[in-house]
Image 1 (cartoon, helix red, strand yellow):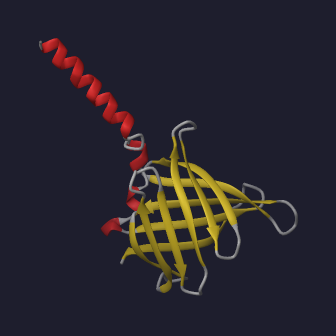
Image 2 (cartoon, helix red, strand yellow):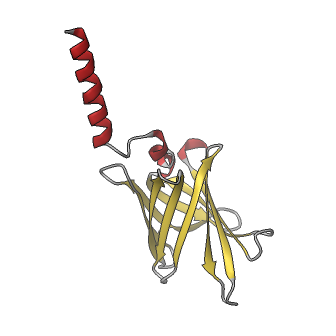
Length: 163
């Protein structure tokens, strides 16, 4: 009788795991970015850059970003843990028509993703974005670009403040 109960419990647990495919720890690595944010930047970090709403899909498989910039630029991204390749992927679509695909991992508590965009000269420009949790529930986002993959310059540095 106890053996039968044990087997039934194992079957129920494996069915529950199959019913919630995006419930693993990897799917929660980007949870520090979830929330409603005021994003500040500029030379002294005192310039309002925009608002960002980051939410998890109901099934837990996606993190969706809704950006509304202070200058009227908007966009959104779809983020997900790719279990087959063991990387995070982001697909960003800006209101200016720019589409950027990134991939990366959580390394020492910092989410790091990289990708490429077509450059004006016909080449490619590398893109690197990091999201770093800060004290008091804040998050720093640093977006860097490089033409050669060796020298990087910051194109955006923002501090996400809970809104």
